Image 1 (cartoon, rainbow, N blue to C red):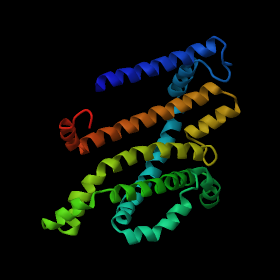
Image 2 (image 1 turned 135 degrees about the horizontal axis):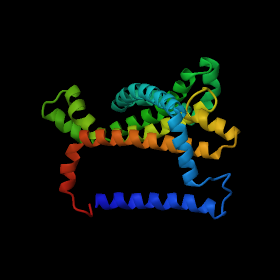
Image 3 (image 1 turned 90 degrees about the horizontal axis):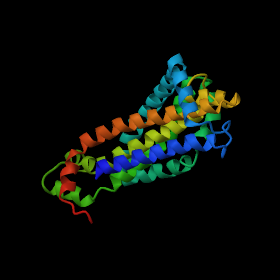
Length: 259
């Protein structure tokens, strides 16, 4: 079943690419606004061979890994602690809810004033743009663990620390790993917004410059590169998730299809 689903997903992608190629060539869409896929692919290959695309992609990837890594390092432990302590979570709730509606682009002017132009403001925007989502998601994952499991562990003689490590963390882990994958997509959105105003190198900068020159093929080539990098990183996270959650495979084997 899984392999059939993958084939169907590949078939859908192939249909979309064929439609992308055919529609502009039939004149249904202005090729200047939407070039055929083959033209975009040629432009992508040209940028890759020249090394320009690699430099921009490496800059963007470095910012994403740095900013998102910092957000993970702070948000996951803090969210776990707040999720375990209801008074602490209530204490921080007002501040979190006040800041959460601010979208990443809203931080760009402040980031430029604080850090100037370069990597620092872009990394800052990625950090603040993903931190609160990771924090609130971690709190929800921890608080969603069935407290009866913790009580049972304590009844059997586990200390509070042991119950957290052996019960709460494994129970919350599937949701946390899914949250990490979703947050990675948000990090790419943040870096694209930041690179269009705060840096002189990166895929966002490449697409902005191409837009100014009305090079739609370059804009789309940059978008494809972002999509491929995001797909690659998500694939790595999926492998990590599958390895850490191998116990779920055994559990699913005993579940009925209708469950």
